[in-house]
Image (cartoon, rainbow, N blue to C red; front, side):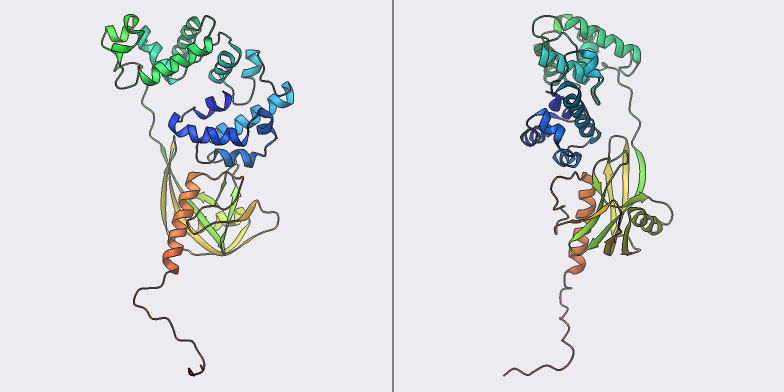
Length: 345
């Protein structure tokens, strides 16, 4: 339950399902997850996005094993004190695992409640949030609160949908204010998000044969994942790329001309990454960087590490450029060997 609820935050069910199955196969128990290295956890999560969730889940599970003997605490306050466990996740664990009358309010439940009760204030306002949680608490009564909470989420996902609610088959249609007043398209009131902020970056694919210099990021964007030496781009992109190599502790011959640009959109940022290539890479002693095997398609041949989708894009561009530059030009004859040669007998 804990793993599924964390994975489903900000991610569609059909996307989560294969990751969920592989994650549980890899870490079948809380203790197995707690004893795993962070690199292993990030590797299993790699590709799912929102990687901070994985790090917090890992920290929370470790605390459960260390403080509570591997058993998720029944006490609601103890559950909410765990890293990454907010009111929603605590309510899901409490109602589904322990049968406690604890509510959950996600986007689906909030949509149902705002329509049923005709709540016209913005769902992001603190007063609206308090009202939604209070109403959800009043509803989650009886012997099967976990089933009720899951039914509410399913109702929101399948019936009380965002654009085309199926009011004619909704079990709450006779009490729904939004349906009576023709406001289903206006509710809930969700303020428009600010557009993603543009970030201009440089990244360097520093090669040594079939290996590429990569390092584990501690930054906010891709914390815990392995990526390429990267820096913010200014007027002199080549100098920024050289600085990225230096800070990573990587010595290499940098080509001053970029091979292309990759765009990557996150929830709050739009990244424009200019890609540079360097050769003869050498990792300095004490550097956080490592030389890792990368195949001809730009796929990292290393087990138990997390690699962001952006890094896959950057490596794929580099691999395509490398293959193009290495291919012989059509119609061009191979050079004759220098020096004297023996005549055929």
